Length: 86
Image 1 (cartoon, rainbow, N blue to C red):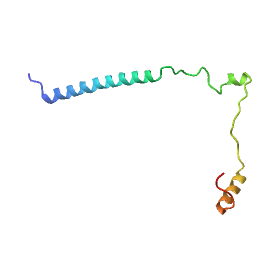
Image 2 (cartoon, rainbow, N blue to C red):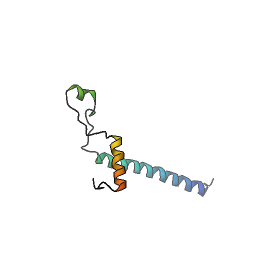
Image 3 (cartoon, one colour):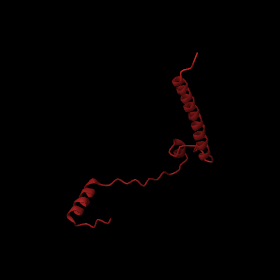
Image 4 (tube, rainbow, N blue to C red):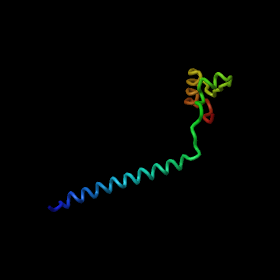
């Protein structure tokens, strides 16, 4: 009984693809593991309840602006009455 060359070629290509997938996966895993050496996960989340209970003050630089002031500023810039370099 003779093996069909098309089937043999297909099986060879399938085995080569499977092998290259395994090699690629292991190489990528080792590169990623090497890149992450020395990096560790934080022990707690920064905004967890445990930090708030310790009495640490949490400051925020977030400032809400008045919409009317923003619209006046935009209208003045459109009319050319205000310097646009602010």
